[in-house]
Amino acid sequence: MTAVEERRLEGLLKAVVAEVLAERQELRREALREGLADRVILRAIQPGEKSPMISRKRVFRLLQPAA
Image (cartoon, rainbow, N blue to C red; front, side, top):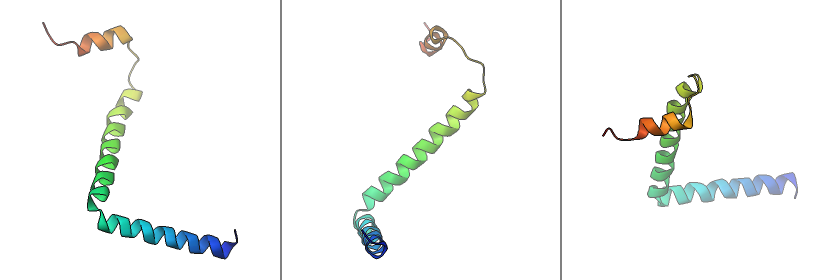
């Protein structure tokens, strides 16, 4: 594929994606929702990466409802 063909293909692909996102707003909303959820999860994980390790047994004990 030549450079000209690649640029043309890239332009067509961008136009198609833009058209689909304009016509199917629920796809755009879902993509935004997924991105935000990923960011929230990442922010929740980061502090835990700096904390000391605990055993699997202790984690599951902490997750058990109080009797």
